[in-house]
Length: 76
Image 1 (tube, rainbow, N blue to C red):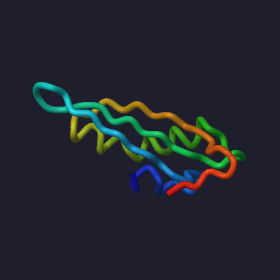
Image 2: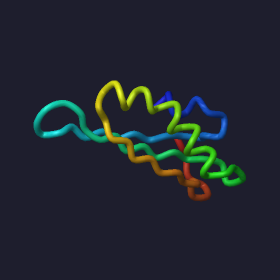
Image 3: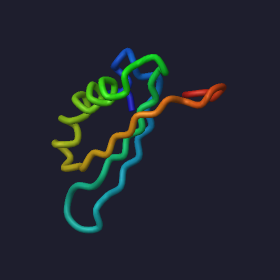
């Protein structure tokens, strides 16, 4: 998800969407991987602000999670 990755503190982001059975809308689950030295609350809030307009326009509920990648893990 390139919108969430625009922040400098974000190393990688994974997105998963789920549609509702009836009507419009659905859920967006976003996992943001950050550098270990960065503040998790700040990185998550910055990414949430960037994605908020997108979720509102498509009537999506946003669930965001911030993580530090495991050592030796390739992101991409």
